[in-house]
Image (cartoon, rainbow, N blue to C red; front, side):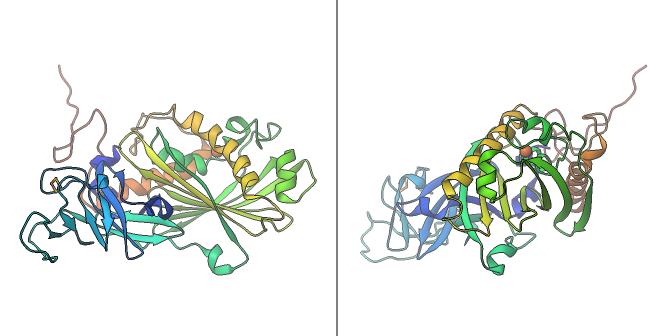
Length: 352
Ligand code: FES
Ligand SMILES: [Fe+2]
């Protein structure tokens, strides 16, 4: 599936940027191949097409002034709906709405990030239980570009067979290569996977988890939110909870913006945020190294394209649910060597 060729993927909320990055002015982002500019208007993020309707300059090269985004080329000023409200070269000294506009997109703030949906969203912004429960702190971990498809990162997150291999240097237990059993509960917008995985407990984790044992068990409640977001809540036997939110926001067909933060039920005095990030850094680098070697054009229809084993069940379910999503919205899966959008699917015919 080429994500930029499937319009229904524009109908989801994606976290695109930490709000803190907007404090000093507008910033560019490419979401599903669409160049947008993000800026802060009266404490709410705004997303517009990053192209001035005068001479096409990138609006992200402009600046913010009194709830307006000002183009850096000739100073045309836009309001938060994308309407030109001031042309400084004209006689009028006051703001005056014109009929000139640039495309506007839905934007919202949550968990310290600006989220954007390019078209009418099919689901609400995700809401996580930890901030509601109380007793949790949020640690912002990673904001970086990976050269792989979101679906690869998603299925990797639910893949109990990879720990002993990809994570053999960090927590993977090579004494237990058999993937842990799992249960899946379907949800309208994804699924919940329950699993208990035996892992090594390296020195840094002994400190961070407040546990002396060399091995432990991760009781995992992993929630997949279609299409490219997961929350992995890990409960340890001593009551420690480490809940990781990973969004893999699609930049284009080949690359994704990783947005990762976590919730923990301990304090900075008990475990320094920098140390928590350092351990998860090692783990994510291990995943990144492998995932960037995979094909970005992930086949939803797997007939003959990739082979499976029993523990691939969550990934196979993701592909099936995404296929159903496309079908429901009248789309066919677009592949690199397949039909382009709007063309009929290619059918193989036998030749004598
Ligand atoms: S290009 Fe933006 S004001 Fe001229
Ligand atoms: Fe992993």
